[in-house]
Amino acid sequence: MWNREASVKDVVSAQPSGVVPPAATRPAEERRLTAWVGKSVIFRGDVVSSEDMTIDGRVEGTIEVRDHALIIGPDADIHADIVAKTVTILGAVTGSITAQEKVEIRETGSVAGDVLSPRIAMLDGAVLRGRVETSRAAAGEPARYAPA
Image (cartoon, rainbow, N blue to C red):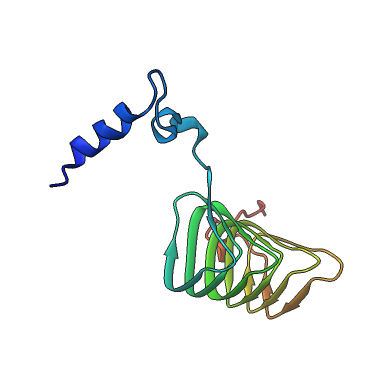
């Protein structure tokens, strides 16, 4: 009874002439460049993204955005180990954080866990309970040695 091709043609033909449905007119360049998890969403398990990501919800498990930026929003409640290029924290994180470039904990952010990153920034009001290691080798980058 329902044929997908027929139903798509019916939708297009039901439109006034010259009007194309919005999904068909949106070019690829206008697509969202950042994945976003809303504050009412709960993930349990592994979250893996190959694009920048913003999380405002709850995640329990692991978060991996290796070559991209991760933003933990102010309403986020994260109980996960994190691996990303850069991590910006405005909410609560419980777990280890490994960043290739930088971890930034903003004034509303809190971390309970180890942080491994070549650079770390904490704004006034940020909370960190754990060990911090800023060597490049710890964050997955080759160590740079000065000649003797």
